[in-house]
Image 1 (cartoon, rainbow, N blue to C red):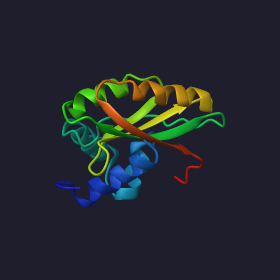
Image 2: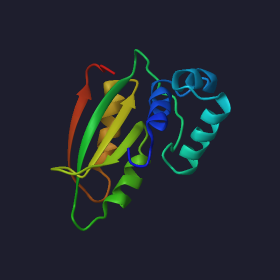
Image 3: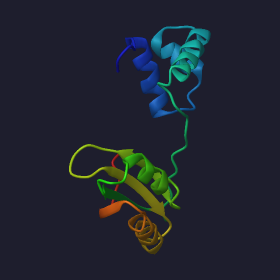
Length: 140
């Protein structure tokens, strides 16, 4: 990561593993005071390096899929992304380079619900093609 020193990178690695880790614990790990860690995190937030803290849920009933989305050339990707983000169950959306333009992760309580969400994405103006893959197991 550009502009970040080794300590910032260690702080970010700790927060990435557990965004609720106490600053005192991070301070012990990186050799700084709790106040110094707090100031660095505030600066990382102010600089936009840390955009948000979130909760990642995992339930046994959850079904997830990845949708690869191709956009018609006449439609700008950001407008399609905004529409994709509004679809129920969409957890993450990325604009990507390669054969497709957008990658979305969608979740639901059943395969039927996920399939319905994928169908909603397919109906968005500007979407020319989708390729969906159901996630069988996460190794993260």
